[in-house]
Amino acid sequence: MVSTVVPDWIQKAVGEGEVKAELTAARVAEEKALARSGFSMTSPAFKHGGELDPSFTACEDDAVAPPLEWTAPPPGSQELVLVVEDIERGDVHWLVWGLKAQKGALFEGEVPPRTGKNAKGNSEWLLPDPPLGVQHRYAFQLFALDLPLTLMPGAKHEDLIKTMANHVTAVAILTARFEGHEVEEWDAEDEFDI
Image 1 (spheres, rainbow, N blue to C red):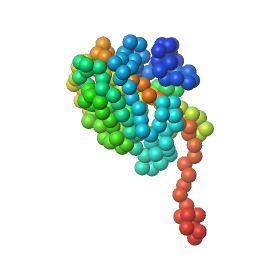
Image 2: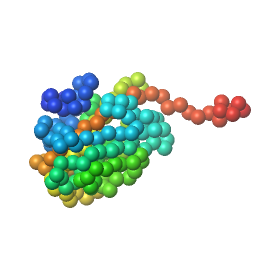
Image 3: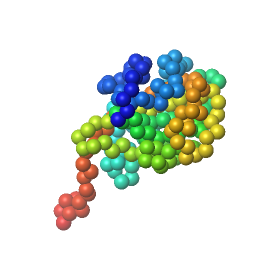
Image 4: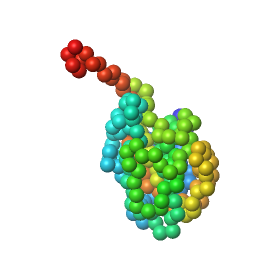
């Protein structure tokens, strides 16, 4: 767990509960960038602060990333970047860039144009998998930038942050939560009364 002083505007954007990790938004954006020009992000799969369906977590074998939708960024934006982090631990769950600076979406399970390394060193959606009975929250942070990124796929979080510094025109934050629980094994005998 990362211990840090969290700006008030980040705490308010995240909502309920203490923010325990330094989120990317606190490192690369200022309060005036939050929801600038009405820039926002939603998901048809969960509301802000709502629970992630197990189909987006380590609880299911065929789990995928959740769908996300966003409004148009402010004029002059050149590219959008998505960073998903565990609010409790600071672990990076997804780094995505190369998204067009316009109203758009990532569909459920869609493979984005360019991805970077998550906390496990893979370039994919890191399935939330908190300990049994422990709830973690996840910050989906969408950044509008005033320049296109030249990072190669597979870049690390720190490389992305260095490239984004001083170029964020707007940020939208959406949060979700998930509590770790046992994965139920499917039993054919129970299903079919064998």
